[in-house]
Image 1 (cartoon, rainbow, N blue to C red):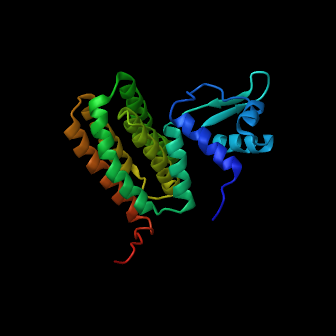
Image 2: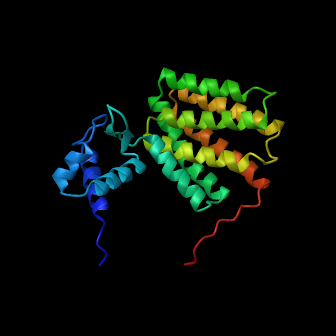
Image 3: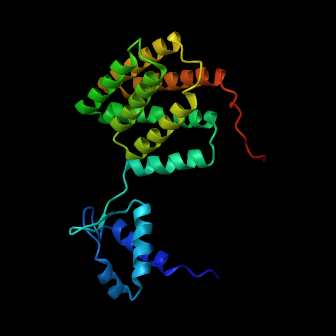
Length: 238
């Protein structure tokens, strides 16, 4: 039987207390010396436990007179970071990324049509303006495309969707940055699709937003995969 390290045990205890709300966001955890007295563990063990929490994004360590371990609650960026690491670490195929986006984005569009705010619409229009610049480089086009798709997810006001879409959009950007499919016609169709979906979201027409997003992400995926060799996805046998 493997015995867990003392630092892991302490980190797990503090993590649960943070997630239960016993230590709220912005609060500072008890000082190291106090934790040493409370737990009867060494200072080295306490510091290691705090480092574990810092890596997990649950505390932010500050030094100096006002230093300490300040509690922070994981947000959408934590989801994006974890998903990005998985995508890169397991070298997820581009086809799989596009399939995932086709499954998620229509739901984002539906929620965005229901819950969007004026600030959300402003972000969407800003991205639309950027992607409409005909003289823009491929890099500018791809970044504006990412900004728009993430803005739709943000407008859904669902932090999990926002985190997933941030990671997926970045990965798809990286995978398509050197592709030849981004021609004048693809740009024109993308601009048209984005504006149509934005208008449906503005009008709070959820069903129209879903239909248009479905067509858009599917057409974009087909355009990408026509010039990409990674079209096959390994599927385990029955």
